[in-house]
Image 1 (cartoon, rainbow, N blue to C red):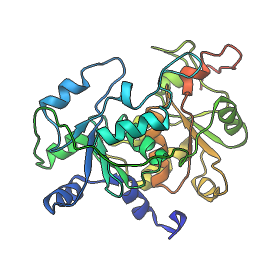
Image 2 (cartoon, rainbow, N blue to C red):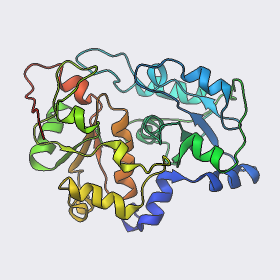
Image 3 (cartoon, one colour):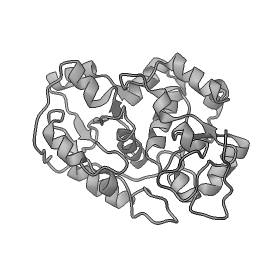
Image 4 (cartoon, rainbow, N blue to C red):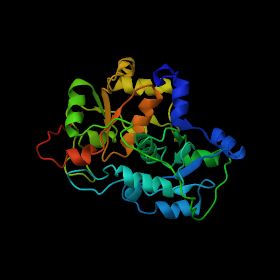
Length: 296
């Protein structure tokens, strides 16, 4: 079955795993690899928080060192790792061919989606984000383990290029001829604040759809109808975006390609194939030849 033939419920189910579903998989003894991707901009205590309590059997993944390549001003703060480096890391997490992966964090998927996107980009098809993350798991009564987990070496084979990406020129073209979404907070999009990157503002023609606005107060992804309205308010025609099958005419960026991955996942749940701009604002704003817009 072609992905475009799936209804939205099935599409959502290919992106997200609910706590009850995951518990059922674990209770049945079915194979699944759990990855804990706790991260926040400017914080370095992800592993310590993981060791204080994580899903049973979950392996900690360091976003800065395992889900990113070497950062320069030319590449942005979180460039994509090489396929070889990603495969080595994934095998160290215990990722195996044909075995599903579920990723989670404590941010509603804002960091876990980076692992989701990279593994899907690498060619591992069955990867999902735990809807509601660690907090949702605990609210449902799920148990937690303490300490570190070292998984048996995996055998996954990754090849890269299985999800679309755009560079700065491609992002500019989408902003002009397609749809380019900015997943940062609205105040950063408008240029009112810029806590980390060289210049404030946004890519000309980009539309503001903060990743946080796609989540409910409980950290779960909002219902499809609400997501459609969020996009419509930003001027995105969901029907037209879904119809663009030959090549994605929708792209997403953020500060450095992390939270934009959640934007790609959200769009995938609605039947929209979107490209990620990995360099994102950290790359764009570092290039003095790139124009910047401040304001709405």
